[in-house]
Structures are given as structure tokens and as C-alpha cells.
Length: 375
Image 1 (cartoon, rainbow, N blue to C red):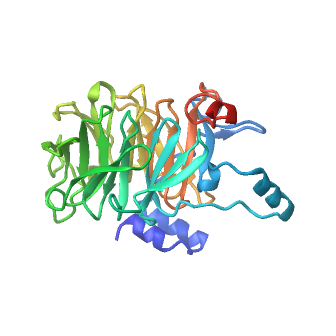
Image 2: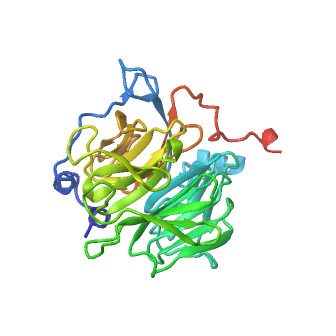
């Protein structure tokens, strides 16, 4: 039984017992206190003073109510009755992807992808009906056109939808994968990279590459092992600067870097409790500058590295409160074209959003349109 299954099965455990359990499961992995700082009346920024801030906490998505437009009548009714606003909540979110203000979140318990469209103020789901019905959606990605790619672990297929959720096609099958965890698409949408995590009894720890349009198998990257270019339980992959491929090599506690043609280039990270180390690395993302973001479920944070693997900073800390930048079981991470960071926590069923400090709150894609602008 893995860490996620244990934690999500025991949500009713008392706080002191939970804290001890987490410490044991994480191998006593600890990091210094987070770099965040909350001023008397100011925003939550990272890193905190006296360092120059680079990111600011912006908002959290819990349910459809966090994005849908509220009618005046409904707002007034809640005002006079004291009722709380309700909506469709995230249950067991895993991965996140973003395209021009539209946020896609896989929910493995609800067997769908939940979509938060901030500019249009609407919410909808994808993958609940045939064709294109999902069973256990995990990893997600989007291409430049906004097409959505979903890795279904149970069906061992990659499902492809247009930006509005219309099913287009699927690639894969049980004969091609042992245990898929994520999918990555190149910006043009021509090739997809599927991480086959393998397993204890499998030798197929690898990244499989396919043509998107035809489903033709192009090549494999890696094999089971501990050497350069070899994997032990790979988890996720992202495409960075110069077409570099960054693969989370979970069982080897590192990130491996490959050239666009799949040849090995370098790696960074090692098992440990200090900054720059990994304890339970999960998903990975890159930003427009090529920097690399790695989620770590044991540390309760994500670390940011340069394209060559030099540690820049981290955001987040382990906490039972579940406030901004506080996590117990983080998993998915994505960075949009504006540089906004989207970070999933399965335990608290939320997606936290962090904005580059230099980007104004009313700039970029994650801004609700006014009625006049929407016409």
C-alpha cells in the first residue's frame, strides 16, 4: 500500500497521531521553515524578507463556486439567510494543467477532469460519458491549441479532447503499458510522452513516445536501473528550454535530463532531507524561462531549479491547517504562459495559485472578464 492510499484512507485520524504517521512514512524527511512571509496587512510572498519576493500567493480553487458567476438574487439570499455558497468540490485531485485562464484538474475519485474557466466564470467536467469516458484519470497536459491529454491508469490509455471537452481520440492499451502515471505533449501537439512507471515486478520503467495523430510508436527513453538514463519508478516528465526532457526518477530520487532526441544529458538531486534533495518527488513542470518545478509529497512543497538543476528557491511547508502554501499530500504542478504556478494537494482537495510578483493581479490570463469585455 502506497503513501497516498494510506493517507486518504485515514482522514479521521487525530492530529497528533497523523503527524507521527506522516513523519514515519516520509522517512523523517524535514526541511527548514518555508520561505513565505505574511506582513501585517500585506500579501503572502515568497521568499520572505529580507529577500526580494519572486512569487505571491493569489488564490485557491476548492469547488465550482470559486469560479462560477454568482447571481445577485443568490448572493442576496445568502446574505440574509447566512447560508454558505455550495458547488461541485474537488474530491481527490491529482494533476493540473492550464491554458489561457482555463484550469484542468484530474479527479481520480470522481473519474473526471474538472474545469475552472476563470475568464468566462464557468465550470464544467470532462470524461464522464462515452465516448471518452474516464475511469482513473491521473496525469494531464495541454498543447498550445488547448487540446487536453489525460492519462487513464486503469484503462492504460491516453485520452485526447479539444479545449471544450469534446472527445477526439485515444492512444495506448494494455499491450503497450504496464502502469502509466502521466502524459506530456510537445507544444505543437505532434508527439506525446507517456511515463510507464512499471512496478516492482516489471522491467518496463520508461518513457514511451508516440505520434499524436497516428498513435505510431516513435521510441522509448530509459530502462529499469540506477545508472545514467535508467529509471526506478519514473513519475512524470516536462519539456523545457531547447526541447530538453526532464523526467522525475522517483525511486532514484532525482530528475534526469535528456536531449530532445532522447539521449541522456545530465541529472540533479539525491535522496535527503535538505534543500535540493528529494524524498518523494511526484510531478514536474517548467516555466517560460526554462526553470524546473518539482513537487515533493514528503516535504510538502515544490522546489524551483534552474534549467541545469541549480536550486533557486522553494514554496510550501507541511501543515495540518491547509492554509495557503500549506500541504500534507501535494501531487500535481503546472506553470502557465504568464508564469503562474498551480499546485495540487490531494489531502486538502485544493489547487493553490501563485503569481509572479512582477505580474499585476489584473494582468495575464487568470482574470475574469467584465460583462462588456465578454460581449
